[in-house]
Image (cartoon, rainbow, N blue to C red):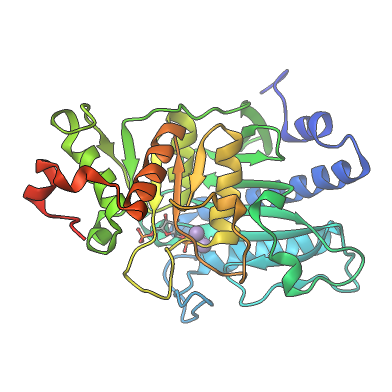
Length: 355
Ligand code: AHG
Ligand code: MN
Ligand code: MN
């Protein structure tokens, strides 16, 4: 029992529902929590739920869908459609946004989401998650594509669910980042992590080093310096993590600091990074900034990007403030041609990122 501890509903009543719009937003976040509970129950069944394996279908990203990708998408779409609080939804798993039409009621918001993040991890029983971003809808009319293409600074709320050993819901409405843990037996989310703050410094970095040969020089410089540890320019040892679930990665950073990088690379010149701006980079950047961290492409604050497409990708560097600032500085020095680190013996020996 969690007598005296704050449920998500109580938190929303006290902190969000003060105005007419706030009340609608609070109700929408309760709907999100309902979809999350359904996906948590489904994913926890594992192979017993009949949702293992891969489907024939391919999403708009060109990625093969898993049954749980599709079921999670349906859980969100159905919840939003019946909830009467959004005018339209857009998802990683749907080519185009989906407008809410009669007999369903349109609401004042737009919901954009990644229904299942890290889905390559499902069959290995490694943590997965969901990510969501809430924007204002244009007005009474049915939203068009342009209405979704708002920069991340205009998000009304954002959050993620982490389906790990415990199920967590972490969200922001622009007044700090707060974490709730699902009490499975009772079915309530309980406020367990109020006002999360990311430590400004860290000894832990996360990047997929199999892409190293495609990185830009400032990223190679940063990672080389971390790997050089005590004997390198950073004069301390770093540890590395890579879960391949952005949600799990961001959650670790919220809990103990760190830097997460999926930077711009030259692997596929048509893609400026791997992660999707509107339902991965933007909501996570909002959450991280509200927890005192930084979120940049290396050259621009992620939340300032004006989107051109619903499924567009963006380079992502986020986490502990001082490390993100350092990597942004490395990009500035590289672009300005003032990066003197190429002369360092550490890098001339290795010759890894000589332009
Ligand atoms: P999704 O499962 O929604 O397609 O997203 C997976 C993302 C992200 O969660 C993770 O950080 C990254 O892809 C992993 O990419 P690699 O397989 O290249 O490591
Ligand atoms: Mn994802
Ligand atoms: Mn996904």
